[in-house]
Length: 477
Ligand code: MN
Ligand code: MN
Image (tube, rainbow, N blue to C red; front, top):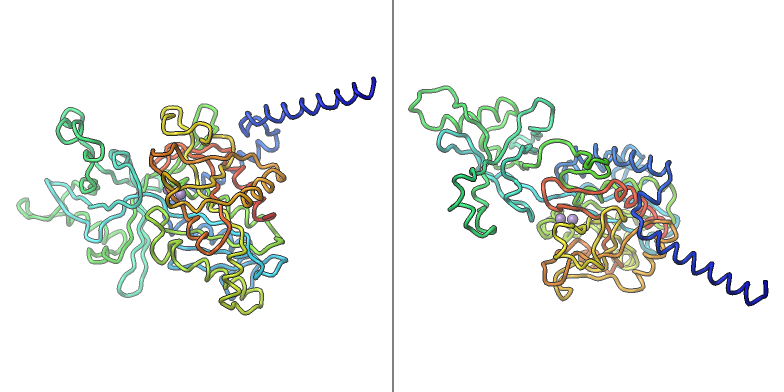
C-alpha cells in the first residue's frame, strides 16, 4: 500500500466512523444500552413510579425529597451532616452540599418544581343542591378542565387548626378507600351546554363541582341542609374537622391511584405530575450520588411554578440567596452580602423541567427539526418563553458549549429542543429567576406526552438518562 493509499484508507475509515456516529444518533436510548444498563433503567423506573405515586402535592414532594436527603446523611441547616437543608413553609426545599472549592467561587445549581396543575377546594366549599352533597373547587395552574371530569379523584389535605394542631387528610389513594369525582353531562343532553360552544366556553371553572355525598344525614325529610351535613359529619368523624377549619386548610384534588407502566412493551410510565416531579426525583438522585463534589452544590425544589412562581415558596422569592448564604455559612465563612451575590453570579445552573414531546397526532404545533422525541434523552432548551423570545432568559452560546461538553464527555444521550412552533403559544420556567441572580442557566428535562393532563407519559429510558445528565452536570460544571 502506498502512503497515499494509506492516507485515503484512513480518511475513509474516519468518514465511516463519522457516518456510524451519525447513524447511532438516530437510535433511541434503549437501543444503545447493553443488558446491565437496561436493567438499571427498569430498576430506576420502578423506584420512580413509587415516588410519583406518593408525590401528589407540593408538600409531599418536598417531604419525600427531604426524607431521602436525611437518609443519605443531610441535616437541617445548623446541624451536623453531609450537607444541609432549608425547608421553608413546608413547601419549598433547598439542599446544599459542600464541595472542595470555596463556595464564594460559585455553585453548581439544579432547580425543579414540586407543584403541578390541580384543583384546590375553596375556603368555603361544602354545599348541597338537588339532593347531593358537593364541594366547590378552584383551579390551580394551566389545566384543560374537561380532562378532570368523570374520573376518580383523590383528596389530599393539610389543615392547620386554631389550637396549633395540624391534620393531614388523604382520601382515595389507599386500597378500599372511596374516591371523589366531578360529574359531566351525558352526550344526549350536551348540545347547548357544551357541544355547540367553543372549548374555552364549554367548561366554566365554576361547574367543576365535586360529588361528595348522596345519603342525607339523619333528620326529617323536610329538613334542609342534610346533605351538606352528611359531608361535614364525615369530615368531623374521620379527621376531626369543623366547617370553619376548612378556611385554614389546603385541599388538593388530584388524579387517584398510582403511576403505571404504559404500552404493550411497558416502555413508558403514565402518571400525574411528571411535570415536574420527574426532575425533582432525578435531581435528588443525582445530588445524593455525589460523595465529594468539586464545586459546592445547591438543589432547590420550588413551589408555585405553575402559577407564575409568585409567593413565599416560589422562585421569585429570595430563597436562592438564603440557601447560598446558608451554604457559605456552613463552610465556616461569614455570608457577606456581596460575597453571596458574587457567588450566585458565578454559578452554573440547570432549570430542570420537563419538555413537551413531539406527539404524532398533533405534529402541526411542533417545528419537527427542534421538537423533543420520546426516548431520545433529556432535552436542553436554550430558550423558553413566547413568540419573539418574550419572557425568555436564553442561555448564552458559551454556556451551551459547556453543557454540550459536559453531557457528551459523560456519555449522556440528549437532544437540543424548543417547546413548539413560533406563534403557537409558549411557556416559561423558573430559569428567569435564576438568571436574575446573574447565574448562567439553561432549561433541561425529559420529554413528556400529554403534559399537564391527569395522566402524563414519559419514557423509562428518559428518566434514567435525565438522572445521569443532572449528575454529570453537578459533578463537572
Ligand atoms: Mn414544569
Ligand atoms: Mn408545567
